[in-house]
Amino acid sequence: MLRTSPGTAALTTGGVLLVTVLAGSASAVGWGSVTASYDGKARATAYGDFRNDQNINAKNKVMSKDLAADGNTIYTTGNWYFENGAEVHALNTPEHNHTYYVTHYLKHPLQPTAKSVRGGTQACVQLGWPVPDTCSAQALPSFDY
Image 1 (cartoon, rainbow, N blue to C red):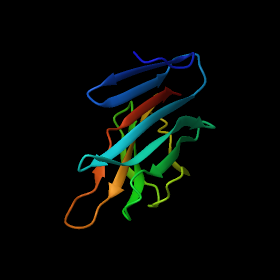
Image 2: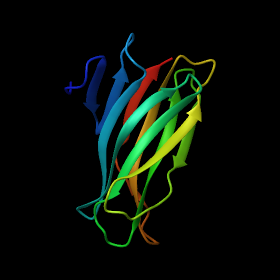
Image 3: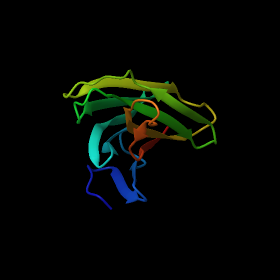
């Protein structure tokens, strides 16, 4: 168990950071940081918060930064996993190569037949062909609604 703010719980398992907003607390939780590495070098990092946006959207505020400054661009990818089994995959932020944190938002409508959602977020680096992009483990914050 990791130390978190009151009303949250966190657990690291298999390289995945799981963070949950506990019942009775506010519907937002901070996550991160996650880091993508390639060839032994950290290339991209991201952190952020996942929240219930007015009971309309699951909204992920993502701050990402290029750690390598090697000409390759970085981006983050978001996935939503709803308790009712619905999944939305791979909504990406725009690519950038800034060595300072850049803020982007990823959001998806809440499912009316679900009661909770997890937001999977990864930091990724766009590598030149034929090398496939490499991404971090997912941060998986969640909230009930």
